[in-house]
Length: 363
Ligand code: ATP
Image (cartoon, rainbow, N blue to C red):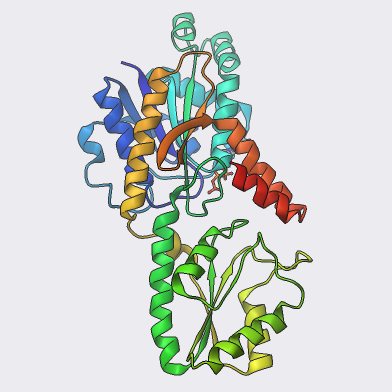
C-alpha cells in the first residue's frame, strides 16, 4: 500500500488529535502504511525514532485529548534546502510519498514548497548516492493534503478551523465565571482573548456572553472610543446593571493603528468613571483542555477527507487544503487559500480594514 505520514506543525489546537486519529484509521482502512512524524518538520528532518509506523490502536484514547500527542514544533532547519534534503531522504527511506500536514499557513506554505522541489531534491540525493535510481523512480511524486489547526479561525477558505469552537467554549466558561464574581462586587472586567489579527474569538465571545463592549482588529475603534465606551458603561449601570464586561481581542487597534490594550482600557475606565476595574488575560488556557464535540467531528471529517484526497490524486493534482464550506468537507487549492490568507494579513497591516474583511469574506 501507499505510504502516508501525518504530522502537526506550528501552534497546537484542540481537535488535532481527532484529525491524526482519522488519518491513521482511514489510511489503514484503505490499505496504506501510515506513519506519525513527531515534532512537526523537525522530526521529518531528524528522522530516526521521529518517524514511526502507526497502527489502529496507537490512536486509541486520543480523540478527547487537547494539544497534539505527536508533538508540534517550529523548525528553522526545514526553511533551509539542506534540511529539506534530509527530510526527503528520511521519507524516501520509509516509502512515504503522501503527507497530511496539520498546521497554520506557514506549515502549509512549507509543504507546498517541499512538493514543488521534490523532484530536484531527489535528483540531488541520487547524485550524492544517498538514494538509489530505483527509489528515485518509485517515489517520484509527493502528494500533499493540508488541514488547518488553529484557534484563531483566521484561515481563508474554511468556515471553521480545527480548535476554534473549543477555544470559544473555554472563553465563554471563563466569562461566565467572571460575571458571577463581578456581580458580587459591582466590578468592571476587561477580558483579553487571543486571535492575533482576527477578531473572530472576541466577537463571538462578546455576542454569546452579553458583553457590554468589544474591541476587534477588523473594525478599529474611532479615536474618541474612550468617550463612547464610558457612555455605554454608564448607561448600562444606570439601568441597574451591577457589572460590566469588556472583551478585547489581542490585536485590537484604533483608527490610527494604535493598539488598544486591556491596560489602556482599564486606565480609561478608572480615570473617567472610577469603577473598580480588573483585567483577566485568558492566554493559553484558550488553547488547552478537551476539544468540543464540534472540533472532534471536524477533525475526524477533515482527516478522513485528506486521506481520500491523497488516494485519488495523480501527479497532476495540485496540493489541497480540506475546508469546511457550509457543513461540507471540501478540497480547495492549497496555495490559493494560503495566498488569500496572507493578503488579508497584508491588508490589515496596510490599515485597509475594509479590504481585509472583504477578502476574508470572499473565501
Ligand atoms: P501558526 O498559525 O500556529 O503560527 P504556522 O503553521 O503558520 O502555525 P509557522 O511558525 O509559520 O506556523 O510555520 C511552522 C513551520 O513551518 C516553521 O517552523 C517552518 O519549519 C515551516 N515553514 C513555514 N514557512 C516556511 C517556508 N516558507 N518554507 C519552508 N518551511 C516553512
